[in-house]
Length: 161
Image (cartoon, rainbow, N blue to C red):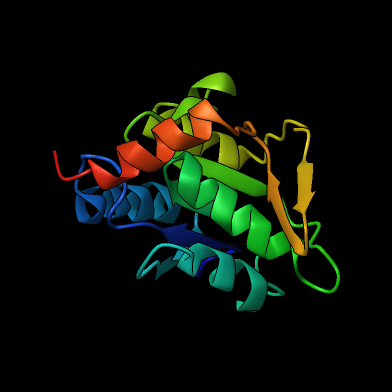
């Protein structure tokens, strides 16, 4: 019987690795610690925002995101758009292409990140809220506009390469 339950939002399209294999490893590691990993896959760009806003997280000891910086940003944005933002810890599991956030906080190796989550190790991060017109977004890694934003948009279009 599992004593801890974690929700994991996974982006099957991020990065260059196979998420099915990563998830099998993760579920095995969590099971060894008598922990359950309940996985919800994103289906398209922006879907992690919807999951963050609407998934019932009341039965979970922790939340996890398996993906890259964009998936993490979307999920956090969704969580912050709830009527009451949650206080459940959020863990990030590297599964993107660059994993900039993961490297910044020292969780760019899957096993290390999973162990930190399972041990309940927490690290405070600044949360940024950007409002422009009637739109508000939240992020924890960086905010870019102008040239950097245009480069990110172009890179997204070239993901097929």
